[in-house]
Length: 544
Image (cartoon, rainbow, N blue to C red; front, top):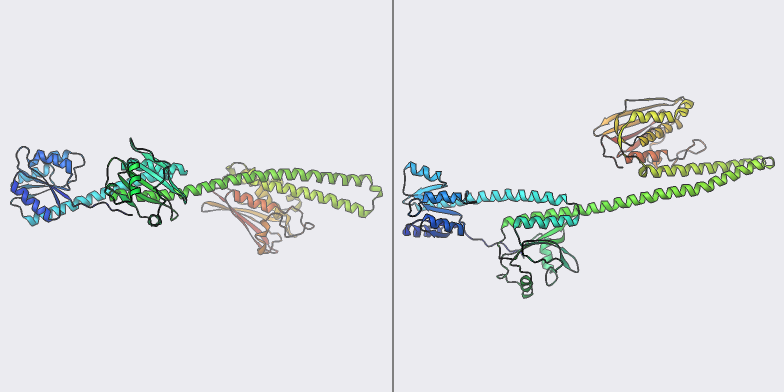
């Protein structure tokens, strides 16, 4: 159920030594809808003020024992009294007395004989102004407290840290005797974390109520409603619930729901065990806002946990893949080497007895084993792109290109290729893989050349937060519909008889670019040439 705090009319403190004036002021204020407290002089007025904390003070200027001016000065010296309005009522009309009244701290003044309509209007205006000021202060304080706690909650990355931070901070701010978080389960609902005031008994692992949470309460909590009890002894609750309150010394209680992705996850509960407590709208709204932040933090913690689990699974999977690739390459290549060796041995030992067909068959067998070894080695290289890559450092693309050109020196000379490039940048990268990327793309351009000598140009332009590279050639080109297929492992557009290779070079290039946080694609026109484009980030946003 949602129980609002009991509303009481503002309290007016009348301090006046004249009995008739006090009676008239009481009557006027009561008729205006206010509660009234009285004192007969300034000293008694101070004592009554401390006991009642009124919304406004109507203070006579001239009184025995302690006059209104001295009383006003001492009222203003009390903690947290600077904003409470003090209306001075005086028969003194000289400017000096008026100035003195404001000097000692009066908010306003009115002269005797009292004009009662003016008095009621003045009192109403001063109380409203004070209430508005207090509300602004409460909102500012609530915003500051909310921001401070939210930062602490959101800085916690794990579920247990989020929940413990929440109950600890709420207990400090509300000065509550006990703050708990209940996790609602289908079968049972128990407190999973708490913060306690001095001398308060722990209820961790205790059931939420002596009976399961009713469907009605679940629906109300699901709708974001709160449950507040100001005085458990006066609340008309079921006997078994009252007994449960007594068992854990609960005098007052405030409950707000915690929703995780619009589903009821749990409850944020505040107990007052020493005495009843009227829960203010300030406290209720603060708790509701905090419960919303807890729900957001829980969702983020759950995502982080899932990402951490996925990351661990990926590391494990990569390790298993690398181990498999190593074992497979070793276990597969050894038999292949044996097959090749024995076939070649047969050729050498029995070459005088073999006809041309037999020699061709042996050549096919040897060539097949060599190609299989190359494919296995290529597969092993592909699997190690992500697992054996180096850490990213500031890398010079021109140096990486120079190493690639040196590795391809014979192929460039044989094809009479002309290779040019724009000024290339420095960026965060794995320099070894950067060299391999340039080498694969240049080798591809040289391999798939036309009848003309290859003309290849490497370009680089900065686009927003990335560098856009291009490798353009004048080769045979291809149909654009093959643009995605060529980056798949072991995919070929031409027969091995026409173009040698494993069919894995572009797949490796794609994996290198993606490891660096970029993208790669191709544009081509059959008979005219091909351009490969790839992007690499300026900073360290790549994935290692």
